[in-house]
Image (cartoon, rainbow, N blue to C red; front, side, top):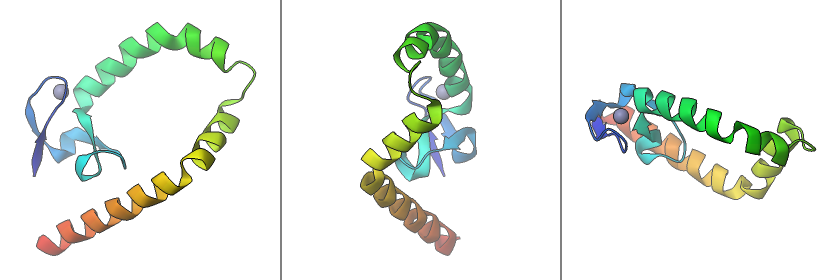
Length: 92
Ligand SMILES: [Zn+2]
């Protein structure tokens, strides 16, 4: 199985994408290479903003709040992801 990277547009094997429960087929829409590049540029650009925005909120608390807020979504996606995985294994 393969999919197109949303950044470089190349058709790559699923192994070239990181797992992500929100992505198509449980994978991110950006290939590993593009994702790494994106993170590097984005991190440098938003580092200052993020630090000031969450300086009073620890990362853990932020993550906890995010999970609470999106728990039903995350559960749903994880369920879907597991089903997709299962059907893929059955096919093989
Ligand atoms: Zn790419």
